[in-house]
Length: 417
Image (cartoon, rainbow, N blue to C red):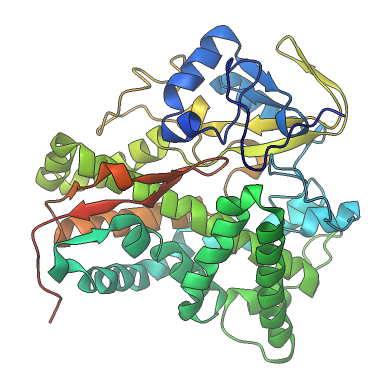
């Protein structure tokens, strides 16, 4: 059996093209030079770790592989294999676990249609005032101190509260959501017991909320989805489907966006010229956000081969995982001028930070809104700041990369009156 799973002492990587490890500290700290090496030596790298996977690094290859549906299935979007005691699931159960991201057509088609209206530009604009007030209230809590953890105290606090607001659940659940997401996608990836406990707790909480909406509808997205009229002959809108979609919104809608906000603050806190540029030209922020998204693209998804696939000179075997390495694609010199340089006013920027193909992120409009509001309010309230303790800086790695601990300092200010 091709399986090397290291719980505590992983084997060091000696060749990134034949034995990569996305949990390796050097990959987490700065994957850009590793992608460059892979792209030059072996554009579609391979490893035997975690039952075998492939890691394409070129923009065109990743877009082509993302279109291989159903040959490359989305039912298992994590590289990490299931826990040894993970209960066997039917194909249907796998696909609705976090639909539509875990689904292939036709389930993907109708579950995605269920959430698209909630994430249209017009709809997400309704959350601007809520997000702005939230950002201000968070800053009120630490501005008098002249320092904070910009990851823990700010970037990690905004997406979970926005998602809770969207779903109609108690915003006080935000810290609990953060803990569950960390245990599912962060530290818990190598701890099966922690991972399964977080999974069960999150699904249990969402199950209670969804079933409550069956009897007592509210003005929220859970109720809206539960009571939708079927719009597709394949649609089976059940509480279990809604629980799966809500599961996706909590996991994917929180970790990804807080990572992007945190990475942007990291950049500004370590690049004073770019910080000064944004202060002098606040209208440049939306353009800068796109460059933050490209340069620090946080998410690497995965597919699983349902059949043998030959592509780009490699033979992907049935059962192999294929990383959708969108962050590496965003650094491909064939598509981006000076790709490993952050250019705050980059004009040509057709990045794939939100993915590609039918699974492109349905919540991209909300993520952009949260980023723009969070950064705008921060720069209005804290126009001068710097990352003050790089030794304590901690990045999460694996399939979602972003700051988890980030101490910053700034001139102390006053809370709003």
